[in-house]
Image (cartoon, rainbow, N blue to C red; front, side, top):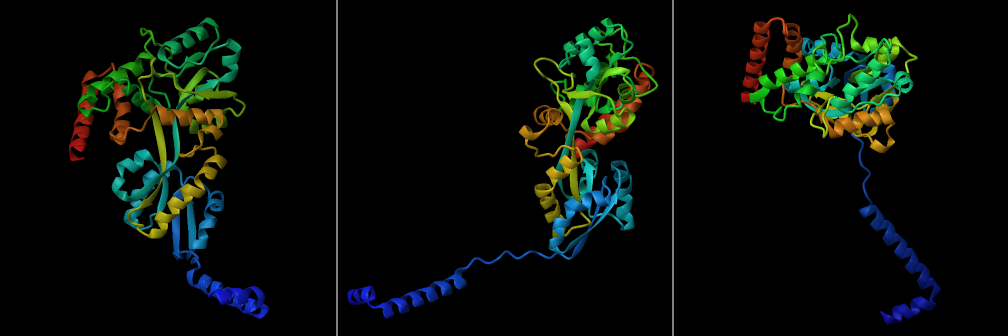
Length: 383
């Protein structure tokens, strides 16, 4: 071995042969052990999607997935249309494979979906007419006590406006507001106390329209509170971030700001109603491509779609959000309540009957409450 090393130091021919042999060995080892390229799967399927987007709007976010031998068929349907048409479409065998839908529908029809993944979120917030707030030097309220002060300051101004729409049957988001007030009960998740807790929430809600209550803030009007806010008849409106689109359709020049809802105590006791929008794969469309697509879409396209269409991505970076969206996101994370433990469909379908009979027909009010309590109790026992 020593002789070979000594010869290698001086014999140029041996050096060339050695280097050549070494190169061949390295090349040989490379081809044996080189990492294999990941094979791109080819699914060879068409994915049919129902979502509240035009095909041309959504396609730019889908086209990168076509490299997996996938094509898309997008039908633009509102959330209401999806809710009314999805179940019949299953019976008629012309259903979509994937839908964008809200949590209320997902929880009602859990068995329809093979899997769901959250995409967008929203929560109740307070909209303020910023011009009026600035002109009157108002402080935006955070609690019930501050809301009373807010109302009193507006009254002192002698302006023909009211503070906020609350307490009547013609409030756009009355059902979600009542469920927010429902969480003021410390045992609100205990379904054995559901009946009394809901009565407490409705009593609290109605106090905002009762002239004899210290919380009185609003008189019943023919138009709902969103319309009155857009027409600058009230200073504040409790709604979802998505409601801004409807407000701006009525009054594109309205200068408004968004802050947290003042339906709370200090220290905070209440939770705030929040929404989640899901991408869901239907159980009837049980193919790997559909599962992979919704994971891919959320990871690579969800944030961009939310940004481009003024929605709020469920995994947003708080520091990068503008102030108004940050309020929504912080509310969702810190105070949000999605009421998964309740049958929201049952509650939403009956709340208007309760409000209509409240203080007018005690027998009907009790009858509806009893039916709701019985139905919830039966479903709770089954689960």
